[in-house]
Length: 235
Image (cartoon, rainbow, N blue to C red):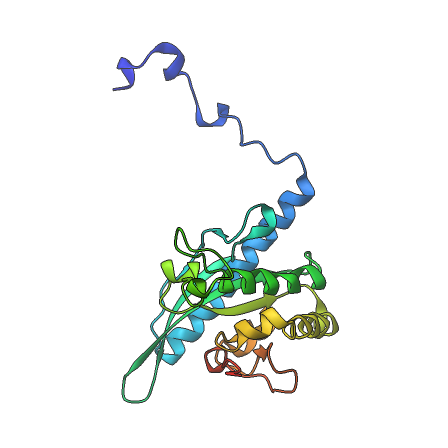
């Protein structure tokens, strides 16, 4: 077969193929690379623990998620790092199917900016376009809008924030910021029906996903718990 190739192709070697060009900002590229590694570490911690517990979770149950648009402009979108599918095995062999949006940050985003993502999720959760021809603010419009997230999910996924690279004091500072934003009127309304929590990646790798490492965002006074025991406020 090689004899049928053109001379300039026969002499071509893999080593001659130029390496892919890196982004102009090599620092940003390194941050992106480390971030992806932390995402993989999060997945492996979950996978290891699921096998110990006998839960339903596989290599393809932690997948990249699409960008969700709820308004015009860059501020009108939110994109989780991963979408998590998980089946918790209950006594009697019953399985509780759970889904979660996962955000992984290694201390590069800033506590305030990371916490502002709660506002973006709250806006996505609450956006409910009206049917064509129905004017906002009218009696006809009341209760007519259907949340856009229902086009993809039967129930809005949980929100899980995984933090790393902050140190212990930095981690709890970030949790404080998330819990502070959780008191925002729009976020608090979402958290009435959407469980949310934050955990340190180091704790996940040490104690597993079912360890007492997830801090609820809606209740600053609550103790840490397994992520699948996080509950909405219901208020």
